[in-house]
Length: 323
Image: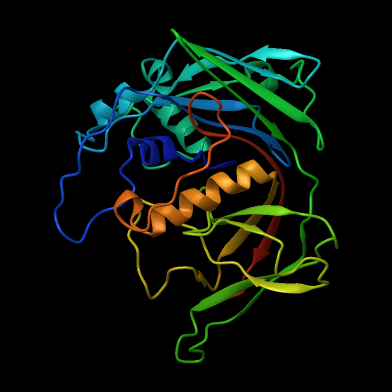
């Protein structure tokens, strides 16, 4: 499975990130739906062509059934990406179209896109993607240091954004250490990495992990970081907690750890500042009980709408943990 397509648009921008300790019905100030974008330009091993998940926002007081979620996808939009010289129109692709021909193949594609656990017969999941990129003759030049603009027109609504593929700063090494309770707990281990960060540069990171045949998942709660505490440091050690799906069962005893015998893959992505600020404020808001906890305005680089259009320049690091 090459990638995890986060579906924050079905969570954050339903405006339902948190829960209250006491039942509370807030005043409904929702005026009208806005376009919600989650789109990426990737550069790295097995990178997907540029793609966009396009939905519309919804009040947090409402039905979250699969039918309702499917209604949030915006269809028949004009979605275009430019590298400053060339432009391509993204093609809408819905898993349901493929499922009508072959459900098994459609489910395989869903898992390929990082949507394992979502039934294509229950949720019509759609993306806009550069089909020409799959065939290796896209007019877009995808390379680090270059900026990419996005323009979306859907009915009378339009949004735009720009993102840049940042230079890559990867790991020096990836390794494991015994569980803190070793030898009592000898089946779990911690992953750690060593990184050398260029001095005097502002670098921003987003980290994903993959365990065995699972998809890539962003680190839970804090997948992004800047380099303020390790700017210019050589061989700085950082913990790498195992990411997991937000819908999977959470076990405090094993959360963040790996098992002996696992194959772990860590994806280190460099991102630009607006991309970093989106996920930083998103994750802080989510962890602080959303709009009813410590309120944080989620910063978006989407002009005229909500969400994020981000570049991901990444490298993958694999570690086979011996039994």
